Amino acid sequence: MMVSYLKSKIHRAIVTQSDIHYEGSLGIDENLMKAAGMREFEKVEIYNVSNGERFSTYLIKEEAGSGQIGVYGAAAHKAKPGDVIIITSYCLLTEEEVEFHLPKIVLLDGNNKIKLVKN
Image 1 (cartoon, rainbow, N blue to C red):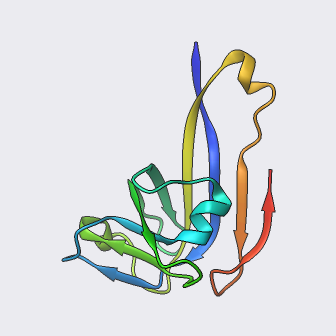
Image 2: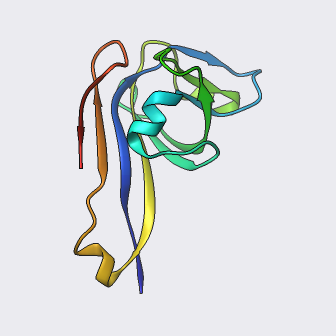
């Protein structure tokens, strides 16, 4: 049996831009994606701490080191610049893998810079 578990999380990212007319979905600074073990086009779940919205989408890369978190297309109706969001990805594990699995957690400061990486 396979069980769905948290793979990684970027905690308390600040949305820096949103655009409903942009082709794409959730853009994340490439360095933050790498720190969290997330990849371009990976499905993610987003939890908006500022307004309670929850939505799923896929990732696209923003410029490395930019601190950019962009919400695009239809998802832009769910988050605006300044909103605090949590970005999560999940994986399927076997019962044997669950015992040894630790998710990667990336904690950010108020400028989308990494404070701490846990796993």
